[in-house]
Length: 129
Image (cartoon, helix red, strand yellow):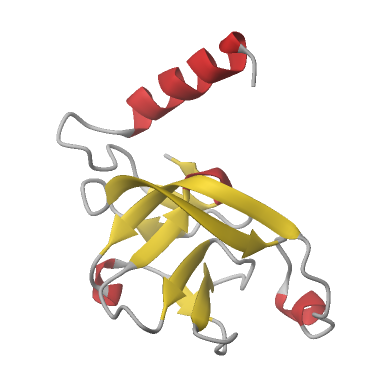
């Protein structure tokens, strides 16, 4: 990653993360604009997580491929009831992926069934308004 891209990401994040480390803007679905999190409800966290490529519900039925991305910038919440509008996939091993509950595009996030208090929304897979 070159310095221009790094400084752009830092600038983008400083616009999204408040002084107390929380989301300063609403987190919304990239596809339909549905609100996922209200401002101030999630903490910015850096954790390496693999998320399969974004798909619609109809495309997910043909899962078999494991193409996707390892992402490090996430919004972290401890309680699933913090979300305004999020759905969960069926278990994939010990993981449930988070999707938009309205348009069912995803995964936008990750939840491990071993840790009941860890829900992550990938910053790159959502918009901020």
